[in-house]
Image 1 (spheres, one colour):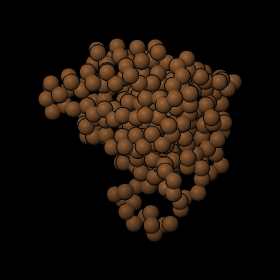
Image 2 (cartoon, rainbow, N blue to C red):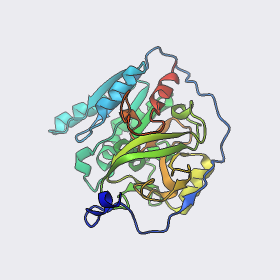
Image 3 (cartoon, rainbow, N blue to C red):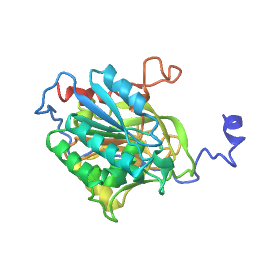
Image 4 (cartoon, one colour):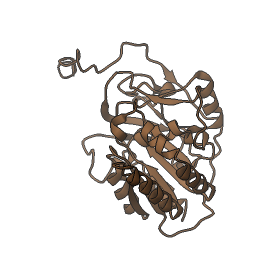
Length: 306
């Protein structure tokens, strides 16, 4: 291990020189709810928004279709102003006919301007799209954002507040990994709450081993905001070590997220954002790695409408 890791350590660091912390988070809202939409549909329709730089749309498309949904990838084209306007109109139309809206992972616009999903967040604040998303949520729609999609949900205000535009200087953010580089590995994450349609089948304390791949996945918020998320029961998943303790240690929490937060939910649980790519699991993937790798939150989202 020493030979493997130390050779490139000067240019490719594999750990941080810092004091390791552990966090004991138990959301105050712990009573499990039964989630059932007011809408019943045999094959829920899913619109997956692909932006320039998105790279996980087909994983999402495959997982939703395999689990009984009817997924569609909607591409945002930005070559010309007309293309952009047409794409926004198409996305609005698709949202009107769908029950689930997905923002998949990738590196939208090459992580510019200044990274962390700002390009997607800017598109979501288009007045037409803002109104359509508000109406979508009003009729019991679900939203999922993974990696780049999680960044966009946070930058737009959909997380943790549940509405676009509600962002201020004290809002949480996702920023550069503490290690100062892109990370790509499997991590162990723990379910902290199941009060969300996306998490309804899981037990609190259940763990999953899932892939992460990002350069800006560090969830950061002030102590005041972290306390508020905790009291509202919005901390959904955390990075944990071999003893299942949420930790700041780099090899388990590779971006250095505050309180080891990997994912959060909106106050009503209908919007879920996370860094780990649960959708990248398929049968026979990661066979040489132990652990529970099938975190099928996608099936939970579909069953909400069954």
